[in-house]
Image 1 (spheres, rainbow, N blue to C red):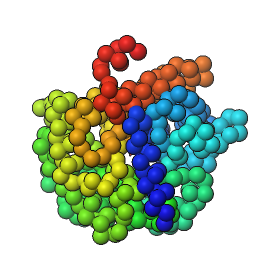
Image 2: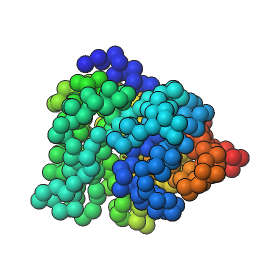
Image 3: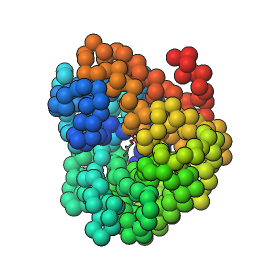
Image 4: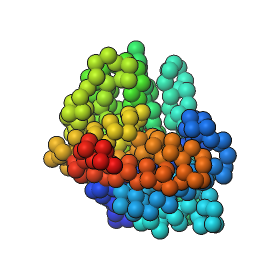
Length: 340
Ligand code: 13P
């Protein structure tokens, strides 16, 4: 294991002004995104769409530190034969790879899941490293409802995350540790804070027990928000303050950075929340984005599967990337959205 290389990559991923593009939708998840814009889910359409993102020069160079890919994409080439990995590297961004095999029903825990994918992971990581990946992602999913999460679900998911993280570091790949507490449901912000704190404390205990070196990791957490169906909404400032409070209680100073998931927040909400946290500042980590939907919803809509719409889609992607780049430094304002 090369800890200097791991640390260097981890810091590069969370460099101020830049963040991660999560473009690792599985074939079934991208189906939902393509259905929404009336695009057929073929291998060529998936390639064309991702190629347009990775060829958005300025955004990639200035605001996207790394791209999380899906297994198909890391092996794919652009229309002119250049590998998609090379497009990302040429733009000065770091290729990464989703390595989990998805959240599957957890025995004896109705409504809960455990993320699978540990079997054969060492060999897959070695192959992904050879293909150019320098970081990886594993997403654990924790749902909130009556009587859940159970300790069983929290414990097994944290254990699997740490198994994954240790295997990544052994292969010189930076693990993005993603324990996502879902924002579905009608729970209030306090319940989200309590569950997020419980999950993060458990994850860091497991990482310690499994000898993961925190300096070579990045945390990808949810923000502390009320459930989507909660009648009581929270202000941007409240989300920022509650999120920072929970993270300060749980995340060791040795962790280089935190890259949030967007989790179903609107584009502008996800940007405003990140910006508000960075405006408060004073915490020991770099805080940035690792957004999927909040970076891609606008370009997907603008593209809608038509080659003549590529410039408009790239413009929409560049805009969201720039807004989030500003938010990663606490320099965003709603006026900049309107001006664009
Ligand atoms: P969202 O930002 O759409 O939540 O996706 C991020 C991600 O990579 C989830 O695993």
